[in-house]
Length: 444
Image: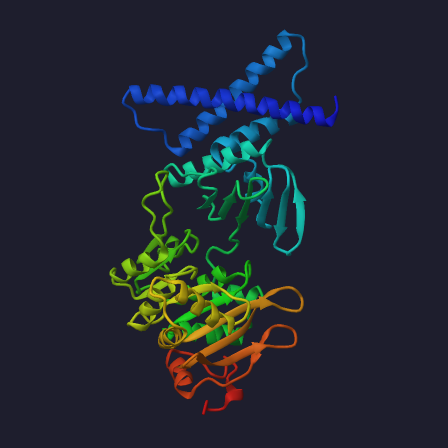
């Protein structure tokens, strides 16, 4: 038998076994409900699924022997059992990829066109994740139902879906507007990053880590900029690790990613808020801008917006300038100066329709520092620029580039900090010499 035929037979067997197990699970759930019993816990359901899969495969093996046919090879049987179990309990055939800690991104351009990016930055092609694009759609819908616990549309009328997987990865799927059903999964390899982690990973050196730590402890409002997949969320987590455990944090995200409340010792007082998409009737949407306004009513010490994407820029800056100093956020921008351009563009598109001059005044009163991420000459993620916001002058936002990209792409000292800022950082516990600021003298 050819390899192609064997794979086809395995897919057919997988579909048949999955169908039988789903039917039996439904029957079992109906029986429990009729008996007045509560739904099974996830651990109980897993045991039930694995038992039913074994029973169905055993029954089919016995039928094959009765007909005089050959039994399925053990390896093939294990693949079928794994595929059915993954589909019903996990993330389908994505489960195996998500279990690989070296995998950083998974991009599916149709069920059988799969690209995987490892931590080394290299792309390689992977095996199909579904037998057809229709099955891929079913997989995405099933994930949404299991993750959110409610019905989420994913069809031609609502051709995109954004959700967080159980392991913290972020999945975004599209259909109808693309030639084939496509999805991308973005892994978070450092869910609890620290400043020491940034040094170990080469994102910054020890001196800069000491400086950035002082910024957080001195309650400076910081926006972290950079391109896609540069580690902005990881850096934000590292900054947040320096926030005292006594402070109350409100986090606002488009999709839950930060997970600051997961470490109850580091951050025991956290309220995590997530924007909500419309339900199947097109109702109930809540955007980040509204959540920022809600968050300000919840007595936060700091407000953390996972990523500025649009109109939330105005309430976010208002939050930063009205006593919630020490707030943090990220934004997509190709340069540190480009962060200001993006902020102005978002403000102009917001319902308030702020002018450039008004936006600059708002940003200058709210944002203290911009930290930018880029790639160094060796293709590694690094902090390449840090700007201190000084003032606004009409259509210009005045800032000092404290660190600028060096010849190798990594940040090197540039313009001195203002004397007042330097004194504030020292008061926050920064050792100016250890942080490498002796080249600025007394900061005058």
